[in-house]
Length: 360
Image (cartoon, rainbow, N blue to C red; front, side, top):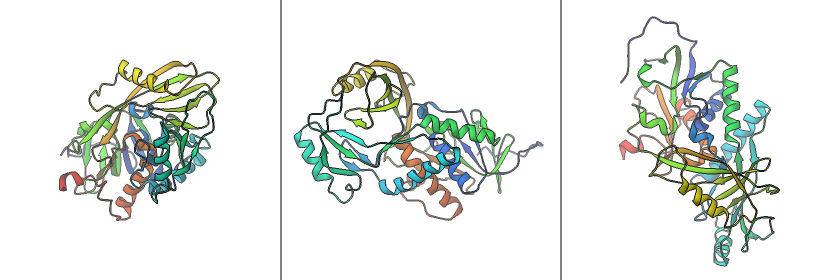
């Protein structure tokens, strides 16, 4: 598919990998390869919409049901040192580690929290003692359950710094990827004037236009959130109730988020705005002002597992996609899994292998 003859043209020096996509996953792939001593070139449209609206919260639990996410500790063990290394390399900071306080709705839920927090798969993340300190401006008569290690990545700062770093290396090309221009050869891939030993697609929801991987059932999940101004509120925690409230900068805070698989238009809706504000007002007892209403389409999968691997028999092109709303946590683990698969002959977990769809 789309293999064309070699034209008489001048190609850039051979890279180890071309990364298609400049979102959270694409940037994470770039650093994973660079830290392994590999050369990269990225093709992307700067910061895509879905990544630019991500509040970047990382949390190893599902706080609606008080359950751990899949491979939570394994992903944390990769994620935390990964971002620390990126920050050290760039001499900047975009990770903000803070406990998540799950607002408990009644005494029964508080009792359930204490019981579940003692389970073997949750005790490393959930504190069984209900946190009852009064937080100024927050109504929580039944207290909070505390989750750690948690926090947030300033995703826009991470992606911007990554792209600037690649631009400084002459390794970033701002353009939409044209799949018909991709040439596959026995020993390399070529795209326009670029050439590399391999190529990785990390296109997010745009994967639906990728002729190599659009058979995979990637689902769009529309997320809307607000940036609000709350003068005088000092909050060193991430509050999670029906929506989360998290400090952004100065007197600005994130409020989110919604989830919709039906409306996939990139347009903010009044219904989402009403949902977010009404849930916020259930526990925020301070006046606020809406500063911005953001929207993006998350790339998700039905089984909540990313797509990693290759459908290419010659193993020239690969995919790393479908991180959903947990890209900050999952992407470093997924990128390392793909690296080990490509270079160290490591097997992919069957639950993330992109071929699970065609072989099941």
